[in-house]
Amino acid sequence: MTQPFRAIISDLDGTLLNANHKIDNFTIDTLEKLSQQGVDIFFATGRNYPDVSHIIRKINVENAMLVTSNGARANNLDGKKIVSHYLPENIAFALMNIEFDNQNVCLNSYQGDEWFINKAIPELKNFHQDSGFSYQVVNFGDHHGRKTEKVFFIGRTPEALVPIEHYIREIYGDMVQMTYSALLCLEVMAKGVCKANALEELVKLRGYTLQDCIAFGDGMNDLEMLSLAGKGCLMANADPRLKAALPNNEVIGYNKDEAVAHYIRAIFSMI
Image (cartoon, rainbow, N blue to C red; front, side):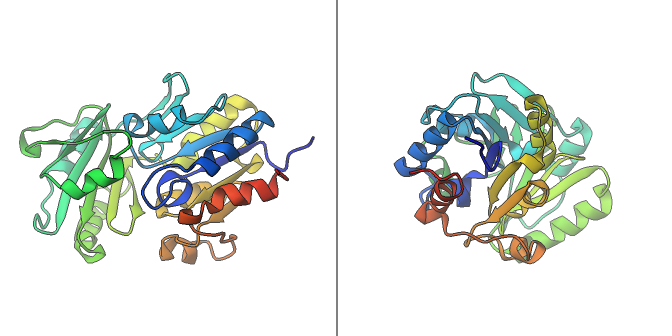
């Protein structure tokens, strides 16, 4: 049977995962049946690899790949690293030590398999209940820039992140890649790093291009992959900035209703 796409690509939080940041059984069953039909599955997230690798283990699919840290890293099912792009150490360390409003912003970094933060934020652990992945509080002034996949800033309000974004754009604009994974999360990776570029590397290994894929996402860090995929679908709960940037892309349902799984079943004629 000829399939409409060679692969599906899905973001996780706000897209494939439910409102509690977990994957539901209907979605698991859908992906397993899709894989059995010979369709490749790629997960693409801003989260770190050890945080989300447990999600793949819940799904019995062959040849799935996981793009993490917005494209700074990609691994296969066996954990083998296929893609790896770090920020230059000096730039990473400088980003960790720029001035910002410490009352309204917290600083984070993903470095290798570790997550570092400048202060404890207990509510962040709600995103990582399934994996148990957690942060280490450090003084970034005494830290280092080694193996930095991304540096990211979480604000109490979008406005709290604006001065940081402007400063980074002015000082490091052509040396880094910057995006928002959510309204309150500004993320900085090495130049050229985004989900789409990592995915291009992966699908090339399979003998096709992003034009042969359908992609699903909800955040500004999904912009490039939704633009370059053969079909890019936005969630109803997507960042308004993403909807404005891609006004002609189809908007499907909400992540809380497992809209991606329902859409996949419809487009791939699955019972």
